[in-house]
Image 1 (tube, one colour):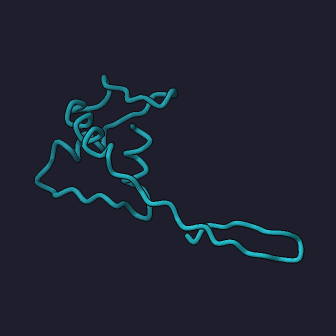
Image 2: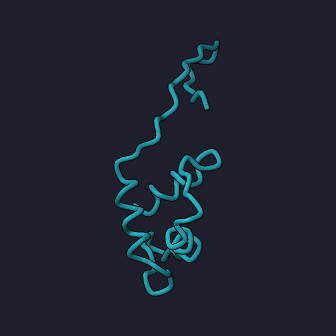
Image 3: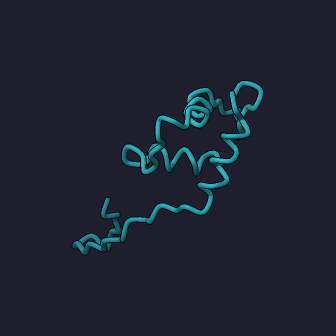
Length: 83
């Protein structure tokens, strides 16, 4: 879930907007540290419970994959993404 939230926050300059009055959410995002195994280091993260709530609420949000564009050439068929 950590990688999923990171993807939502960083994808094309972010698809998530957080109002400045939510200081705990912003602080938790700024202080979040990922362990080497892809999990959150809760001892180093301030408001780790708020961060967990954000991760859980973002879990159902999915980024749509780009449609495939099939190009035919004399060398064969190549598939690319639109974005």
